[in-house]
Image 1 (cartoon, rainbow over the protein chains, first blue to last red):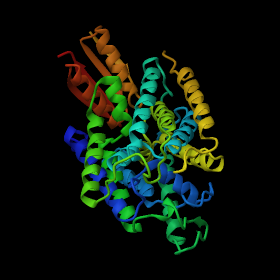
Image 2 (cartoon, chains in turn cyan, yellow; image 1 turned 90 degrees about the vertical axis):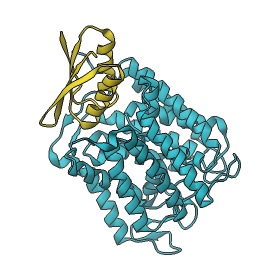
Image 3 (cartoon, rainbow over the protein chains, first blue to last red; image 1 turned 60 degrees about the vertical axis):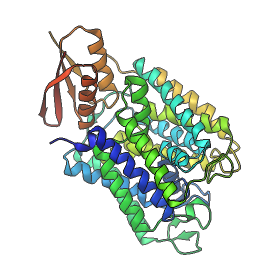
Image 4 (cartoon, each protein chain N blue to C red; image 1 turned 60 degrees about the horizontal axis):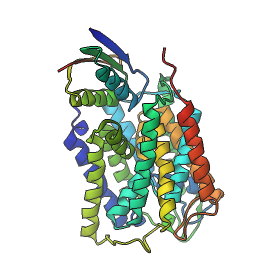
Length: 361
Length: 72
């Protein structure tokens, strides 16, 4: 059976739908220019479980849960659910952590970089330039034989672990729903102010998350791959999807009155141009070395890919370090130790890039 | 002359990189590329077509794909 989502118009359609849905999620209550930011929302989940205690970014985002479970459903229906893993998991964990640390210096993953630009935040241009630069460095490693090695087929149940964790988070949220004005409900933390306190209705968030999870699993939508394939192969397939997201989010923002062009006073953003760019150099390099943007890693984890799941767990650890150690930026500027973390992260990614090669038989 | 590229267990972009290496080395007029996931199958097929080669056929066996590509 032909997969229509893997065609040129398929990927463009998926990008366009994600762009419009992201703008709508903002309209329904998600933070501005953050309709579906994968890094931000994983960071919010990290906060909801108390792994970091930054009180303004704690919410169990149903979109992320939906991404994983939606991808699982699509993979099961189309017989692509395939438990696998064992391709340098600890390297993937570290890449996930530094990808998150870099993204939180910029304040957004590649998805949010595009959503910020679509909302008029011109600081995102620096972030996108940095992202492209980081991915370009990654392609140099790839051309020189960089590889995390082959994955192996895992027992059936192993593929269910990440979807089960997502389902467990959903159950926790249903058992401990937000209470107006309270910072905690049962075991979960909830922001009472800041971006973590801004969210679309639960059913809207979960429904859109599931829908995007299904579409992205079928289309292989990936914002890192978009730039990587252009640089590495001169292929624009994935790029056309990413550009569709940008264009349609922009159109939707115009229609909904959510477009405010400029550098200053942009929502959940800072104007330190160098660190907007360098934070995303780190994130882009880490995504390129790990083979996918944070969204794609979530969708793959839903398909049973244990290596992608380890990357996601690494992102959670990275988010915890970011906020516990003062690495994450805020609208006031870069965090007290954000610059040091970017430097260390680039060194670690370079070490992984230079040393990890598959033995050719 | 046919040559085999074994990209099983690898995920994008490596199966494509390995395939393009073989196409560019111009040693063979036919390649047999082994991959074990749908995304790699789609990516390799797309890359082969971009190089002016054609995908002659694809066999599936237990989740593994054997892509036979020929010089156009």
